[in-house]
Length: 257
Image (cartoon, rainbow, N blue to C red):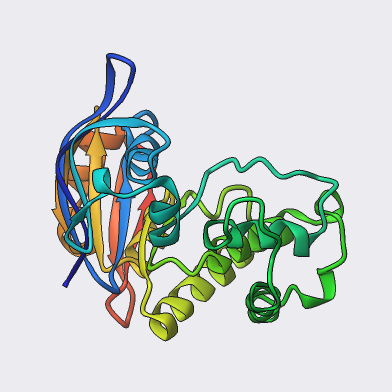
């Protein structure tokens, strides 16, 4: 079953096209990582899926065009974590995560006991229960990233769009966050589409890579198919070695020219 399908989708700001004619099928339960150099159009493509950026072409969720969905219906189906989320620093962690329940509430309605239960479960799952009453401004970078992920998970959407979820995290916290996403994907059956700058992390967590450059898709496939020395050199202007770990994971390491 295809959870997300893009048919010649072009993301644009007014008349300026930043991602052009992207066609893509994402199977339910898969993890697809969109990679590419800065300015390739990766983030704008995700924003077009969630409805933040205008687009041409067709976007289908579980076979249904998003054009036929209301904003509330789309928010129930798609949860989005932007690269630089706006965090109301005076809010507590609990209040912030509760924002993820908004698409499930009637206009002007307050959260129900069931919404609070969802938030409590998500906080526990992400090891945030001890921080529930803390203001966002008092959290470390890693704790903030987990709070953002908690808000996304509280939405209980089948499709998670994560734009550079490891930004600002050291390698240990980045691995822990991606491990958590992967575990939740396996347990909940969610579909994940992410953008990631780190090619090695992309290769080790995603089932499939989509390489963009200049607003267009230039390569798709498994990490081993997409991440070759020549492809990375051509699209990133970087000298690298492509290595393989004992369990077959791809590692991209820079080398001096």
